[in-house]
Image 1 (cartoon, one colour):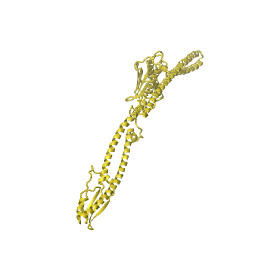
Image 2 (cartoon, rainbow, N blue to C red):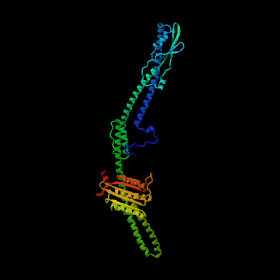
Image 3 (cartoon, helix red, strand yellow):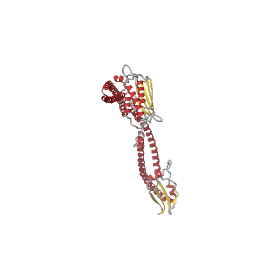
Image 4 (cartoon, rainbow, N blue to C red):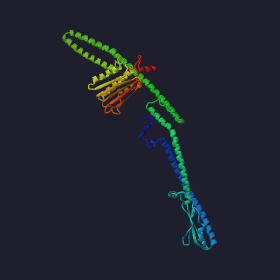
Length: 479
């Protein structure tokens, strides 16, 4: 049993995922889905960027090739021999997405102004460049003057600008997606907390039911489905409370009926068997007097038979007394309850030499009715018997205290015996004691005593016997 509101321990078979809360699982699933979606989006962006970069390179390369050819032809017609080669670097610089190399007839490269690139924030990672870069292509444009080739222009595709643009766009998109996802997760965290709050309340309510507090009720949440569950929970609690009350009334009635039967049986044994034993004893005494007047041999044999029959009658009479005490002490209802309990303790001491049994009774009324009186008697009888027989106790202290304001009787039996082993099943005596206490609406518990021994605490609701009715029959009559 767990305290109210506490989380119950999970079975060992539950893995790490099952041990997490439902809110954590939902958020983790959403994060996993978003990560998968992000990976797919990155793959799509890279594939599209690769195709776009390749197309941009081809287009830029074609434009640059035509531009270079036209420039070479125009300079050749305007400058004359060798003039175009010297002026060409000034006219074909600044082209984007291409790399231009001008070489003379010997293959020596001529200086050319670098192409101006649009500024991009940060550097493009090498892995991204490797993923997006397309296979480079190159064209060679010859420089011809007066029918002779004086050099050549190598035009190669350059994708760095395009890759930088794609990286910048993807970085901005990733930041925006991360911000949106963080906002969504924060909103889901709050919303799931509000949605799952009724489930925690329901768990705490189930703990209350487990503890036997069937009067506990849940406030219906605003969520329709959970409100239905809360309504069914409240109906279950009401049904369990009614069932417990019915069981209590039934158990109380059973205890009362059993006590009535025991009282009837005890009365029959006392009123029927007792006079019969007395009559037999009187007749034996008469036969014994007659045997004294018989001849010696016959008188001796008759005396032996009479002695045997007297011994058997003594056994029957002792058995009858023990049965009467076991079924129902005849003194109950006729002498004060404290005196009956003191007589019980004295009987235990007389049959248990070397054991010390003390009784302290405070505020007890003369009677509380058969059900309460017999329950107290049986509890003390069973607890002391167990302490002597199974616990080998040397000292037993019994305390009975009546609280009239609270309407209850508190009973404590403490011994210095070996105690009850952990997990040991209860015997029929303790089970019967528990049934009697529960039937009267009382409680009980068994506690270990340091350094050794056992303590039994019993609380029974009771009011002094009045007007010929005990507390239990009064409740039964009202039902």
